[in-house]
Image 1 (tube, rainbow, N blue to C red):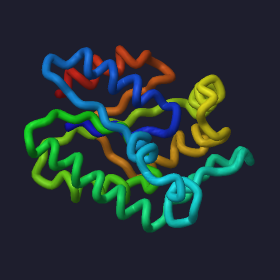
Image 2 (tube, helix red, strand yellow):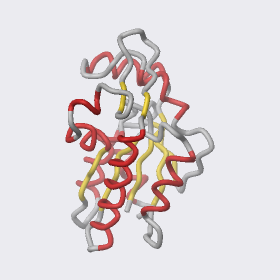
Image 3 (cartoon, one colour):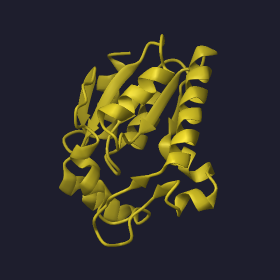
Image 4 (cartoon, rainbow, N blue to C red):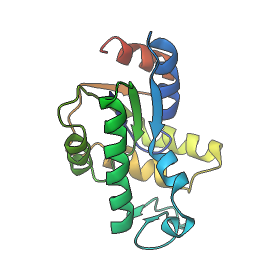
Length: 175
């Protein structure tokens, strides 16, 4: 299993796709965005779910108790797929820093995991965010360092300094 952690618009999804092409075996790529997309709309609006900022530029994301319950179940399900033989690349945003990792570690107990920090300069990520047009302004800049606080990784890559394909090659060499 490979866990990619980085802020919004840091390039995690691109790296995951490049890893799928670079690795000789078949790997599933699963992102936290997919979890959010399949949640009921009310959990994308209310205080119990995941709240995205208004266009105030703050980039702050709030996470409620009901979201955490579903996220825990999702983590357990991803771990079950790995235990059943699937190779999985997870693309996540550790809003809780080291606590987010501890939650994953609990779900992945006993599994071999490569922990990857995906870094990207806040200004570069903000430019990508603006170009994408599907993100709330300020998220990339707010998350660029936040998600790495208290974290340790097996490997780190920087998408402001290298393209996704090169980052994937570096990661694949560690698998």
